[in-house]
Image (cartoon, rainbow, N blue to C red; front, side):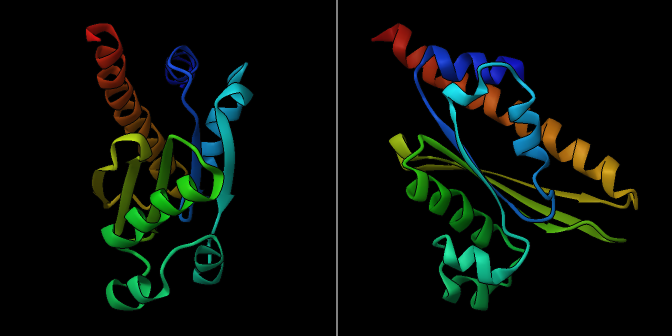
Length: 155
């Protein structure tokens, strides 16, 4: 995560999170890094649909696709970006039970682009599943931000 924070600082970009099944693990990882306050705008744990909706997730999308879906993770990532005026938003929703399925969405507001990952696991250990999810998000963010840095270098 340190590399992600350093890269965000170097390109003057911000990030916010809306987490459900990870319960704030990503926000915790971000805030464990010194100087993260320069780039981390806001972290929301929206375990219930009610609070996803209060932060801008379209209720009709939840009703149509269910709260555990790629479409809702996209709504979460974009909604948190808009709510906080961040450059990047991360939305995480899913189930961490016997048939774990998790939907990750990273929204790049500046380019109006979503990056998605769907994870499934038979691992029944919630803590271990959360660690895996966070590692995947860190890898995703590193790749996304590398693309942004290349744009700065080329121009």
